[in-house]
Image (cartoon, one colour):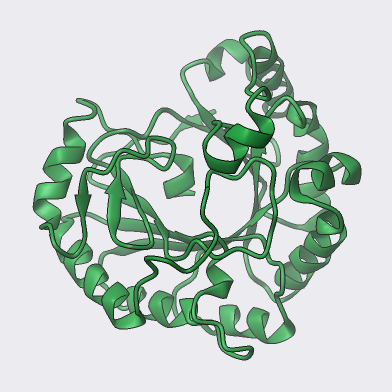
Length: 304
């Protein structure tokens, strides 16, 4: 059992677009169009504001919506231009993309493989059970995603499955871990469902209860060979084979969520605007974020 804590590291999820070709019941978003989406040069300008202002290594998770839809012309995914640009900074510690993989092609896989800096492709999947998964992510998602994961793994890319646990899928922990191992991925990240956006309307009653969360902890403890009590301080987990890492709440100066129009939230699950890039100085933003916690921690959604 290891704990993921912040020292001089900084990490954030960068939601570069709200566009999405999925229709997931638990989605945090309310809008799914391109309103507020910034031009590629504007995104690079924001990167120029963030990276030099952070003294330690920076972890960036590029996501959406569906990031593969950003400036996609049918051949080229514009998100890869931003990722290539980020990869040039000396203090980029980890660079990942979070995707549902819908619409992914062989060229997408080869373009991912060609990126000079890419640590993990994080792929959304909600259960090892097709019916449960497709009940959350819609019909056909399960088969498509497993095929895409296999293509990514076969190409030599490191894949991590990302799962949002609710009452609909919280008993899928062990099955997902077995599936991840059989596919040759680097395990599963488990986080809890928070009712925001579409998710509040469609799954508002599916938040895990005080009785159901210990069942999740017990399943993870059984896989990792630890006690459930050792897992209690943590809010999210990365299970990879028999190893487990736990992440506490990430509120603080070690992380943020960056929205398509440059708005900064302390966390995607805390949609309270605290600043806007590139208008505000990153040094100021770090100070504001630090007011949310005296002991900042790095969140799996950012760090993994």
